[in-house]
Length: 197
Image (tube, rainbow, N blue to C red; front, side):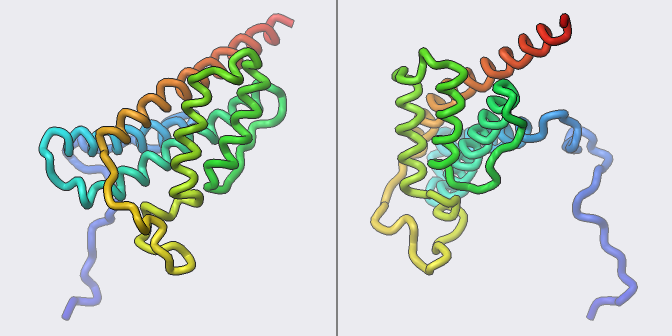
């Protein structure tokens, strides 16, 4: 039996090995830090599996969840930044439906970059989001073995090649990061112009 007066160390704290102290609440744009973190975590796990050829059957779930979270947050960031650029506020939807988020983001992208709306790169992004949304529309499929109604959302699926998934997500990332960066540059140009007048 434990002593009622026993004290435990806090779980979330800094410690002497400063290289292991993760800094939080340091960024002016926390959504960007979260977005990058989810993708880097998934990429690291896939690279480990490719290198070791082990643990793919258990790590598939966190990897897919992390990639889905990356997609969701990047879309929300594009929506928020695009709205800032278009003087439509700076909000983004607070749900997890990536197909709906893509429709909103695509509308903004088409307004900001009208000449690129039918580019093969955007069609690829839409295809990858649709694939993910069809399998995991609300971010439950890779978090839990059952959805809210007790059904297995991955029923009938037997294999996911994680190297292939990694490559596809990185193609998505190449395009969506370019869009995100281009919107940020446009915002900076707009602010610079406004500061002169």
